[in-house]
Length: 533
Image (cartoon, rainbow, N blue to C red; front, side):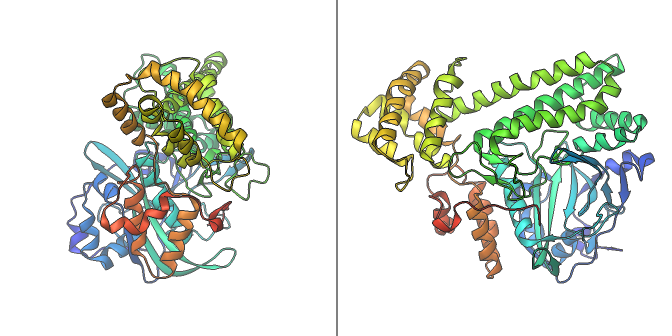
């Protein structure tokens, strides 16, 4: 059993512990949660601290770095903070790749408790800290490569405006973890207002435990949706299910807009708050391809990029079953589910308008007339989605102020890789025609053609279309650099893809990371991950 830390730094840390999921649902021990204890880690070493994550808890990054050994002991689980006296693991079920998998649960995530800061409550979780009652055949540990990926990805998506869990700290250990081959271990500390999932409701419902379903729904209302009030009990569950449905739609719209593919959209990986959680074989698209599959275990392409909205709705249908027992009306449930498509489509269209510099005028035809034809051209050319959208930021000035055919040709050239088989005269001609005959007239409906207005639109577009994202090749390069002894590169890249995700110029300490905003190198093309981490 982990001992309480002896570090005065951490004993005296001004952390305000509050009642957590397990404490508020204490009567459901063994049903919704069980106690857990972190395993002892060998030679833990602190390698990363998210300053933004630390500030969520009212801490400064310096608190971690002043005594790296003490911080490593705490955030590996070797020692516990004074307020984390009863760690626990959550129990839930889930549909995995469309099939009911029964009881699952936190198999390698151990919750330390909840900390309140700045009016918000954050549940603190160690991922990779050892076995729990729900580990089944797993060892409860995590390897360095997957931990680096999750630590960086959560903060990157937050910087891009995508609802997500957050990262706090990354600790390497000398534990040897067996996966396809032996690897070294790590523990990542992650934060979320709540870790309740769709599967948290599915499991008790599958067992006919309506009491647990109702109590869990009441907890979610009280803890995460306190603004929902209703005179009749059923009404509050109607409002709750509607908000979960709409939050999910809006989050998926943001995934599609930034080109993010989750990879394992099982119902146990779907947050009741509409957060992006459980980063496994995720990826950002490089070449724009709606059929892109980032998980090499997904041979059928169930969780391909274009399927994510449909799968999200399918998952909500699974959640509808336990909520039907609370609401009691099939028609009401159906109406809410039917609202998903409009919520998703409206959110996605708004996000894409902004990426194209259309900030002022909303037209119902934008999706079919402007957005989808532009994406079809990118797909036809195999154009890099992120680079093409970033290049488009120059379009308002080039099209409406300079109106220089040669400059427009150069812009078209920047949207597609020079060696692309589709980078031919016919594609160039079609893209030029789109820019001048479709996009330019639509821009003129949205912005004034004076220089100041155009410059403002271009600047807004640069704050909407990122330059630096955690592509698979970037993550793999960071993993390799860390394996070769450059641990410091992890937090440099964290700084790059958060503080400077939208920056044209970089500070001196990040100059050597410039290449991460450029084309994918040959060796990095087509990289996929698996669920093995």
